[in-house]
Image (cartoon, rainbow, N blue to C red; front, side):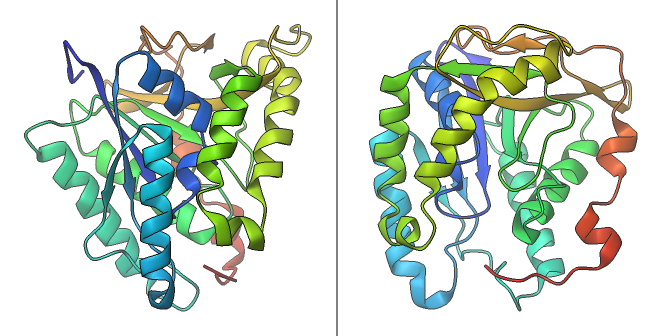
Length: 269
């Protein structure tokens, strides 16, 4: 794993500005606090007329959150009506550049390939396909915003103070929150996951977590030419990586999403 005295180098891949504070924000902030180098790669800036505003918003959000930021140049067009095949190729090329660079990430965090939104799904497929070509690929921690994670393995617990930090950073995306207030979404999901995440990760009947809020992710790791499922656990930010179980999830990762199966068109940006 790419790791040094500064901790694990972590690349969070964000299809849109604001996904960095919606997908797995408590996890990113916990890793940041533990001394790991967390960089958010913002792939798109919405529609061209919104680029300047959304660039300013994601820059301020990452400043408030204490995350590094790289914005794709040029931003990848993945809104409704854009060429999503070309967008997926461009996302994969950026991931390849990061992995081939002088400081490759030791962990990638990004969206599920079944996350309903076309931009999230193409990003998830690009992560999957590029990492699948790498004999020494970093682990991939998968989040979902619009869809559901059927196989969560990793839980991050957090308190009210952390929730306020997330809310503050997410509020930097001011006009987006006016359009659809994901601060409500993140708050409600965090409270619900205290009950739902341990049941799904540790087995039904598992007790609720002793924390006000939680996030769930699915960890997958390349091993012996296949994708293996991570070990169920509550995140220890100081030692975030663990060996996988001998459970292949190739079939799940290769499976088409409901959007793919129905050829559902992209409804929005």
